[in-house]
Amino acid sequence: MSVEESRYDDTGDVPLGGYALLATVFASGVALFALASRRRGVRLPAQVPPWDVALLGTATFRASRLLTKDKVTSFVRAPFTRRESEGTADEVLDQPRGSGVRRAVGELVSCPFCTSAWVAGTLVCCYASAPRATRLACAGLSAITMADMLQYAWSLTAQKAEG
Image 1 (cartoon, rainbow, N blue to C red):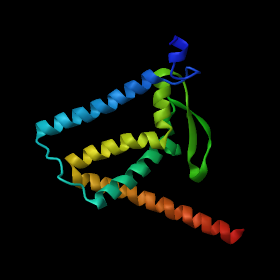
Image 2: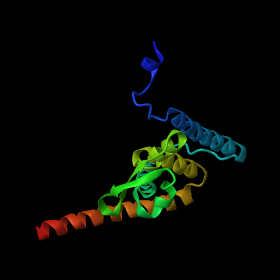
Image 3: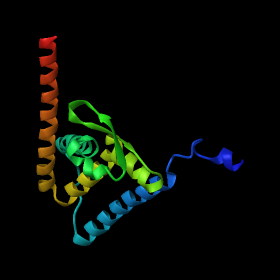
Image 4: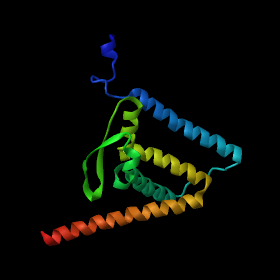
């Protein structure tokens, strides 16, 4: 197989090295958490109640969108992305820029689906070591999620009434 045939993508734009670095950082973070937890004697929960899974899920959803789409967090994304356009509900659409690690990070911080794995990992680690505080933080993020859904439903109702 030639070098050209063994290439992952035809354009050469896919930052595989950056992806590998990000995956290594994620896995290292999990390993460091596990090691630190073990040394501190943190006991992992025997089970996670369905209510906590739902709470963690809605909090992950909101935190991921906050980090990847909200205007107020643009400063976090700015070194790695450029503003493409305005989305719905005052969200923004950013596109990754640069190459290598910069592009890989840009793709991560502009994608709510990609960021949700990192947010969920962080919240699960927090839940394992400080469940009460994590539940409280997740409750706040989940309340925002519910408020956003109600705002969206209200605006749809108002649009139907006008039209």
